[in-house]
Length: 212
Image 1 (cartoon, rainbow, N blue to C red):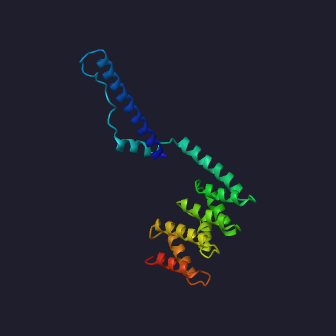
Image 2 (spheres, rainbow, N blue to C red):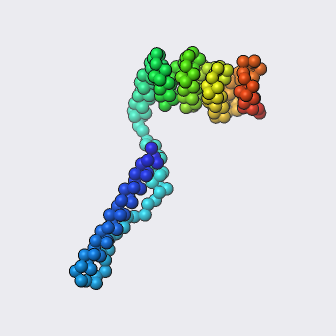
Image 3 (cartoon, one colour):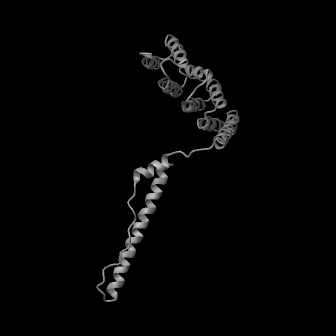
């Protein structure tokens, strides 16, 4: 979004520069036709572009009032509720789209719905979308962490990989004394001793746990 707006502004400035250049040339031709030797009329050029400050202004989020923040939260809850309802659709494409959409609304209800669907949906594509969307949550519930750990033994390789990546990202953002980190590390350590875990995933989990 920021890059698109910046490119649009740059294009406008370039167009303005071309217009001014055309105006200069037109002024010179007019003077020559009139037989004068007057200097070309001075037409000011565009000011230099301060790309750093422009990018900073575009990338700085607006300051919202408490009422606006509450309105944003309310809209997130409503959008999440609509997507959660779609998780019950008989069409796989609808459920995949709903799981992907919930990644943009990291509210508690979305966390629980994604965890449940990751555990129970018959479609690997839907389970994959759930595992990926949970990576967008700063905090994960116990149910979500348990579902991701269970997905490490999923029958689909892509689901296993997505679940591992989400767990890895989550653990790397926890403080060393975090209860969530300690309980998850303990559960993963136990899982590495399970015969259900394939050798490749077991090795990845062991490397993730090394030093923790």
